[in-house]
Length: 93
Image (cartoon, rainbow, N blue to C red; front, side, top):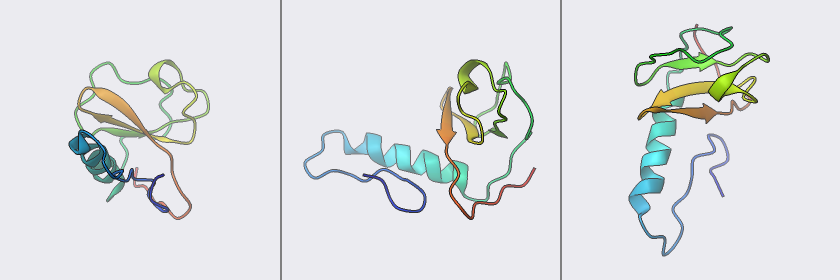
């Protein structure tokens, strides 16, 4: 079960490899806090993103972003992470 507002993962009692869950939460926080995006209408992921790059995903998204419409795509640690916006989020473009 995640946190209410940012949907960050909780540690489970007796969970093995707790660092994995903590690192996931930190990665999400890093992508959400002071949210700004490079582009808001790019349908396909860039070929060579830099760590920390964020994009608003439009309805016609393709490739790794397919099905992620109206989400924020964050490039972190060599992979795309989907951040699903919640009411009240503000992003700078």
